[in-house]
Image 1 (cartoon, one colour):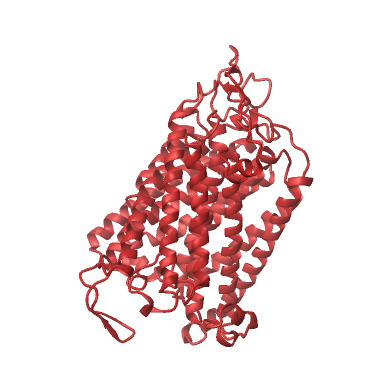
Image 2: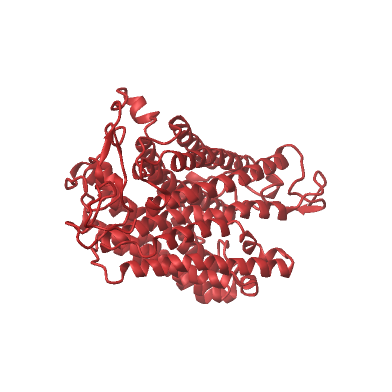
Length: 592
């Protein structure tokens, strides 16, 4: 049931104003998604180059020399080039894919619709946020093309390697400056987006849309925005300080008496490299949840929809999301057990790390409770949601080991950590993106993605990622160090080279499977099977409007919400679902 408004808003007529510099949150969401799509294939390509080099460290590839005349002279990749590829792969994936698509892509498009709003609270700020993010990506990629190439300090950019200038290695001149500048610009864009998400959720909910009637997707987007507002502000400040150390002679992170390349550095004194670690990881661990929380929301939403059951323990899920957001700011020290911190501090961070596993476990058991006894529809979207649960649990289990200081001292610089964070932060979040894409594609385009191609893509990707990242845990147990470009000269690692070859072939296979998704995506935009306005028989407000949605979402009417977001299989209801804006009837009692 809805009440009329004064007028219907119409989209701008000009192409540039409507599709380029648009103020429409839906167009901006698609722009973010496309930016992330470009970034994920760029980041994936860099990872394939790394894996190729690891199993063929002495191979001569002529086009390597054309791309990197100095760093790959004779067509052979140098260790420094390998480290620069690793740095850019991690940075692009973490910031421009995992941070951008789940929150700014899906969130921009669907948050206003799911809470019954016509747009985001600050449309101009929303537009500026996207274009600032695009500038950040351009600046980041430009680091490949300057003298010395991209930086080699990793996506964490630890000083003094990242702070002392070009003396520390190729890419540590202008390439590192561009990296820091790009991250600072990205932080600024993320802060604008976070303010917009919070204001929209707090102020623009329609009549009847109480906080406890919001879909769990909205809760995760809200908490993610709060994490971004607090975390990116700290990273922005840290980046400015690091840039000052490099260009203005300050010493925030650079101590006195450093010996680099047989030279004693006398221009700095009094700085602390550990200060950067504290500032970076105060942002960095919440960043894990910035990447994964939206996927948790999408998964919760889909498990309820496709099992035709209300979400098990809705309030517990909300409190778990809030707990994860709060505790996420208290555990950054577990990334620094190797730094020589006081054992009592390490114990405190370890206990808090175990505590944050409690709300994660609540969510996992509630997902299982939602599935139990349900009428499960194995659509492609549902399968990716189930894949998210699998990867989240698998990655989370290995995190328990890394939360113990005594074990982390051994595992920290091994492939165990690489396998852990790729499982729980990288691949799980990407499965959430695939789930959201298959679920909401009919709403965005009015057409379905091809289910056969979707399931083929799912099975290939699911098997592939387990073949890539599960062996990394075993490599970590035998002490295989990460960040090494070549293992052939390390005697005790000779026996694990076949494992690396297996993981490399699995990476090729998995990357090839993503072409199935790409073909399916672009083919279905024009040729996909037409979809009705509510093809999944879902309950949230986006399914109460036409597909694609009108410019102002609800075509001049304000929705009124009477029910919760997961009213499935309600006794006495004429259908097995009740839309949030369906008028109440006396003989039907819902949970909200």
